[in-house]
Length: 425
Image 1 (spheres, rainbow, N blue to C red):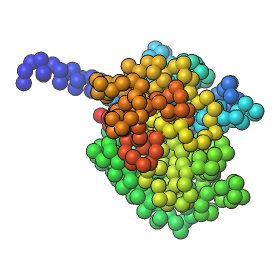
Image 2: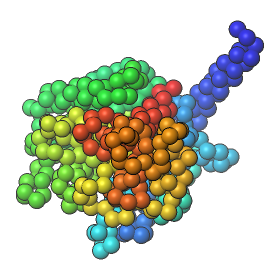
Image 3: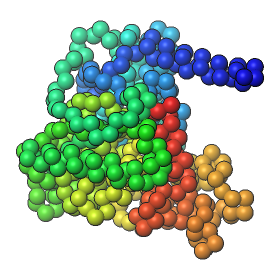
């Protein structure tokens, strides 16, 4: 081997070895869960600590501990309490952040339960929760000192359930670990849930780039039953006693189906190592939702279910934004048009150079007209992020825009692939 190549490979090996040693020096292969209350109105927010818990698994990478994407409305940072060195960080989004853009947020104050999960520290750390302001700048909202020997950190796993392996391809530290949670499945329907979990896997890996990256995924299903079958549909006076209390008409949008009971979501997810939480709902009714590094949810028995679940996973896993603008939503002024959105597949052209500009042909105009000449090309098409003007998307059509194209555009494929490699390499 040429000496120059040897040095490159040696330095790469050394950096990876150091990263692994760094994880083992600072963390255990289990999780610290921080539950907190997120409250406010359309222009104010507050974070308040609820409780600290130990979860038995750490499903995340032991190499890529520092977030390099800068996605999400919020961020969690873990620093060594003595040196102040950054040990771990992740971006994420929340249901509260979406609610802030609704009309209701201008009328009342609400609170939401939320959680972040980080690798369990071996020594004292400072955990900081940050949130972006309207200008896109991160501001500190909660900072706590965590001593791993603190006897108030709860070691008891609240809800233990059996776990079914749907597809296992690699160790948790070298894979994207998806935990599937059942909503609205009774004890007699748990076999259906396992079958639906296999249906989820088949649907996910039918789409590119998941098909070519299948060996980098693990999928497990938590076998937790509900007292009643189905989901809440408030407008139809349908209320069900279910394990996660999910409901259609979230924010009074019929197809938006989510749960506000985030503690129960995390309790069920703790039964397996996970990077991503996906809730499968036992219903034929069209609906779902996905929030970056929070959780995703979709109905499994609708004729559009395959496209729905992959679309929502695009939100939850890769931080992709909605590219449509004609469908009604509960949101108002979701994006500040004076700054660049953090989502990798949306732009306001404020700083397009750091988005998908490198994927354009040299003769593709910016913005790109919706002419037949460019319909199948990567471009910069106006309309996206719930508005017709000022926000641009990478393709005339894409799974983040509609289900008619039935594929991800080049910018989304790149974003998904980069995220898979971040968790698995």
